[in-house]
Length: 61
Image (cartoon, rainbow, N blue to C red; front, top):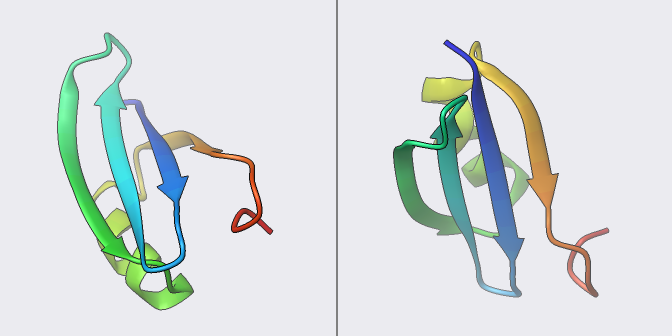
């Protein structure tokens, strides 16, 4: 399966939306804006993730 993730980053938390190749939602949720927390949230889909999109802004560094 192919999956894509979109991350909307803010200071305290990051909204995450994961969809499959047809655009069907696989998971939607939030995680603390912390590299380890984000990795943990994405880990169930990591082998299928083809692309991760990151919102640009002051927290997207």
